[in-house]
Image (tube, rainbow, N blue to C red; front, top):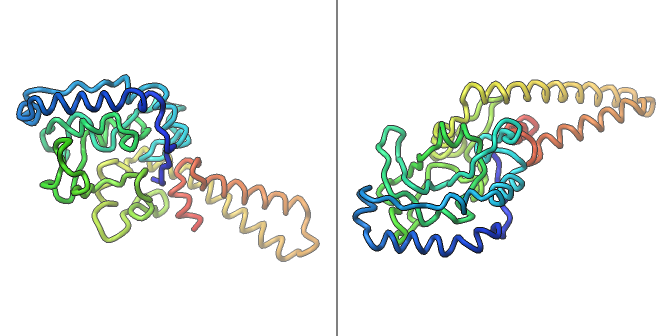
Length: 261
């Protein structure tokens, strides 16, 4: 995971339709709070607003086409999902828990709560999971204070994930003194076998480039002014390739930054 930087200005459809849609949900909840908290009634969230093509496009471009969680390039193999960091319709503290409703309905259309993710991270792993350090502090309706919550998942758009998740080769590991990295890796399946295999394949190629760079540097240093212009040009190409791979747009950039650090 790397830090996600969204445009400050939300897409036009969110500016135009989200406030009224949010107010409508809040009013519906206030009309029968016990029914919604018990799950007897459900709030109807308009998928056409938060999942509008312009919203997905803006998120996809901001994230360089990568999943906000696993950093895989999405568009080549899937359409990608607009994911709610705090789940909109219901939530689970643990994977074995029964789904509790109504979820963070008042954040369903909020730009800071939306991310572009791959279907595997979203549908198979995170789903409605949103664990807190203190479950009793959970905001269960729009009258509660979100600031009391201490999420155990890293929000890549609100904090730098590299303070919580690092990489030893292709394997993600928790950093820091808290549980956030450990829980994030587990909930999002960041060490699922297929994903580690994909990271391993890329890592193998980057390690080869690093080895070639070392050989070229040593060769140029030993030859001094006699070093060929071709050797110097090839070294510059390798340096540029490694630098490009570690930029935000690079697939699995967090892993590569650990390699190159």
